[in-house]
Image (cartoon, rainbow, N blue to C red; front, top):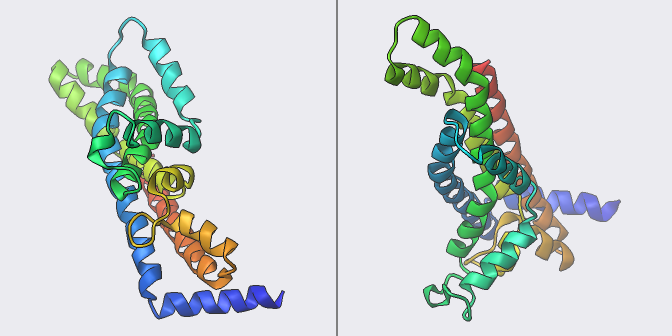
Length: 230
């Protein structure tokens, strides 16, 4: 029990003194997750909206595939991305392996189905009522579509935040693609795993506290958006 208390004490000291290495790891993790969620949102939101709004042949199959990808293991994504960006892979010349850019590629793949599916569900839940009401009041198809976009904004933002929460807490892709290299590709999750196995319990707890604080903020923001959209 004593070593746990000592670890917590050391962790608080590292956080309160804003230890340079702790802050560097935290900032790298936050930034890579931010860009991953941003890229996934730019791609995933339009995909989710188009699938949810329009009817086409094979729509059910596409939705089933997206739902299946929601549970895609991070290590599987890591293996696939590793195969493509390793030296012998088709993208090996770009030298993305063991870099933060490589991590972003893997995290985009993880966040994309989450953001797309949640956007799709938001559109499906709101479309019939909003569009039908708008058209019955004399709005044009374009005006009805604009009203739909306005109605689902909180749901879409919630999808983006959920995607961000997914990638900032993952470890498989970051470890396999980033390599956990100090000051290059070491994120909060990979650093926690490394420092704890090295016996640096206080350092690991410090990073864990920061990760929990970030998760708390993400959940608070998500709850706020859900309340605003209710």
